[in-house]
Image 1 (cartoon, rainbow, N blue to C red):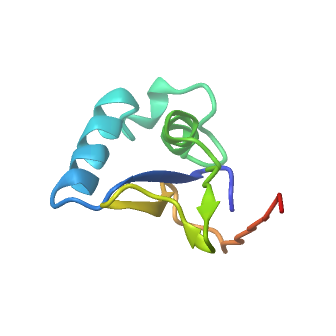
Image 2 (image 1 turned 120 degrees about the horizontal axis):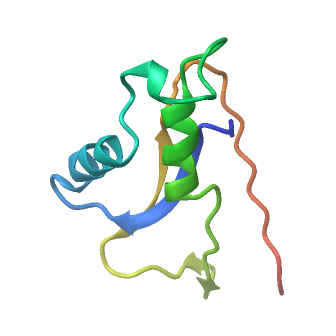
Length: 95
């Protein structure tokens, strides 16, 4: 996973992902690029901030060999820059 991407757990409900995009864009708008000190070589400071808000990892319980989620929960991958190859790492810890 790259430093401008996120992994999070939430419900897979209609419109929720668009609501996330709208909310994150209000918190850390992409433009104008000049509003961020980080921008210059790459204009992706907003993507770093969005990732910070959404998190970089999730912890999930496994019960009876299955992911222990609520009825509508799923794991989602959020990409806020989209310019890089991706890498996924899954670790299972426990009995």
